[in-house]
Length: 77
Image (cartoon, rainbow, N blue to C red; front, side, top):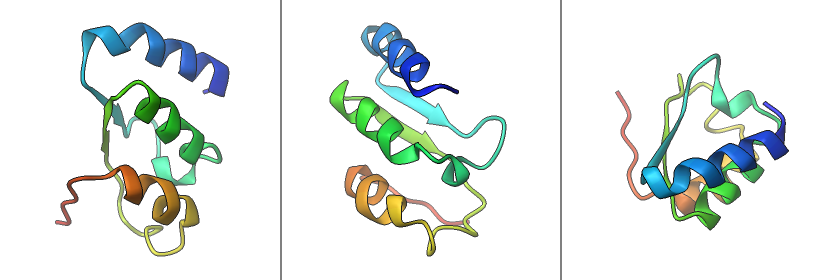
């Protein structure tokens, strides 16, 4: 999804919810703009529900820098 479209959608749904799910249609850690998407959600005070298979967690620098900083709960199965 284009980042401008994502930002627009987040601004529209922010008054209606407190959480955004980032897990449909593929592995979210592969998205080249995941860090920016997390920042957009944080600016709207939205929690992120991110589902991943976990393979990329150790290699994903954006996860360590941004997603991990915004994450207040992590579950590993």
